[in-house]
Length: 176
Image 1 (cartoon, rainbow, N blue to C red):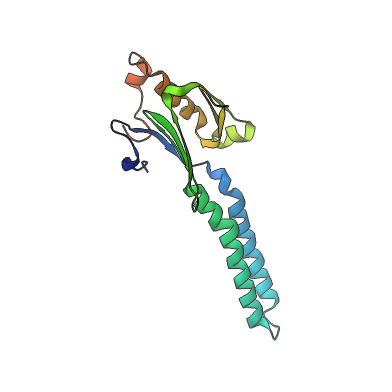
Image 2: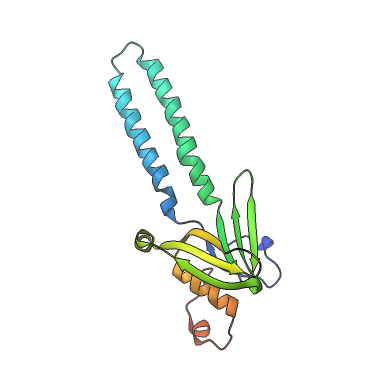
């Protein structure tokens, strides 16, 4: 899914658009499975009791509440977080009710680094570290394919038209 074109400047194109890595959703999925399993187990335990109807309603309400708080909220937060590299800047947008964002012009970037531990390497994600001219280094965690994003960002920052890799490379992540 491309980043909305109406938010881009003239002659600006999306190079990379990512959401955080899916590993952020592991705990919400685990909570969902435990909630369903525990709810079904408890519902089966109380089925022969005189107050089973009320107990099922209470279990249902608690289950829905747990799923909304610990599953749907993180899912919506994950879906509404964007890491976008364009031909002119890096944009990070996050939040549902209160949106926050940061834009870093590519011309202000001094260096781009990445780091990932063993688990991140297995899962194919990591932390991208961007140092700009005036600020402390910014760390963007859980970027999927961090090494590829690092390489694409480095090439966009240095923008060498004579670079054979740029001319002969595969299409960008947005299909261009």
